[in-house]
Image (tube, rainbow, N blue to C red):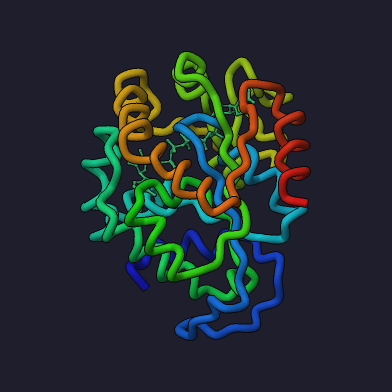
Amino acid sequence: MVDGAMATLRSSMASPTKPTVKKGSRHASSMESIVLFGPPGAGKGTQAQRIMDSTGLPQVSTGDMLRAAVSAGTNTGIAAKKYMDAGKLVPDEIIIALIEDRILEEDAVNGVMFDGFPRTIPQAEALSNITKVSHVIAIEVPDDRIVDRICGRFTCGKCSSVYHDTFNPTQTDGVCDKCDSTELKRRADDNADTVMSRLGAYHEQTSPLALWYESKGIFHRIDGDRAIDEITKDILLSLN
Ligand code: AP5
């Protein structure tokens, strides 16, 4: 295991499958995974939570894994924090080590739904040696919508549901719709300055991956500048 924070995060992830593989053994040959791709604030996390039941695949968010490592003060977290605070990508070797480890967990036996990974060509190349990717779902949102989305975001600290002050508020102020927790929080990197760096990193380092996946015939473009339900419907159609 890369570090202890991952254990905490993984244990909180619901597993839709019965554990059949012991940690430490590779099971890449039986796996088919999905990648959710798009700029910061595109709605990857929002959609991942909505399509988990239909796909039966657990959500694997490198952003969530890194934030857990930062909170736990692990070596991975300490190394990653300065990049995250600056809105830059965390070095590939850290990210690839996290994924190589995560994919060995029991709930990943039938594949996973990657949220925010891969973000560079080296990450995509490493992924192709780890698991087969059946679909890459690109949620496309214009840059001028992104700042509003990110600066109004808040999440439930207990079940990780994602909300927005204006676009997707909770039904009762201060209470999570899904689990009734009042532990709602905002991310340290959700501010206008960091968003611009994150968008810059996306355009320079991540968007070239679209061509890479398009050439493999598994890339689906989804208009993400619409109602959340409409986007979910189109993603599910793309996956069928
Ligand atoms: P990460 O946590 O992955 O952040 P991100 O990619 O910037 O994506 P977000 O989580 O901000 O957005 P999202 O697309 O999930 O949108 P959401 O559904 O929340 O990464 C954070 C940092 O970690 C990175 O900057 C980097 O430093 C590091 N990192 C992570 N992975 C890495 C990797 N692979 N390599 C290197 N470094 C890595 O929605 C956003 C808001 O919009 C919410 O409030 C939501 O309610 C609202 N919303 C959603 N859909 C709609 C809609 N259709 N209409 C209106 N509002 C909507």
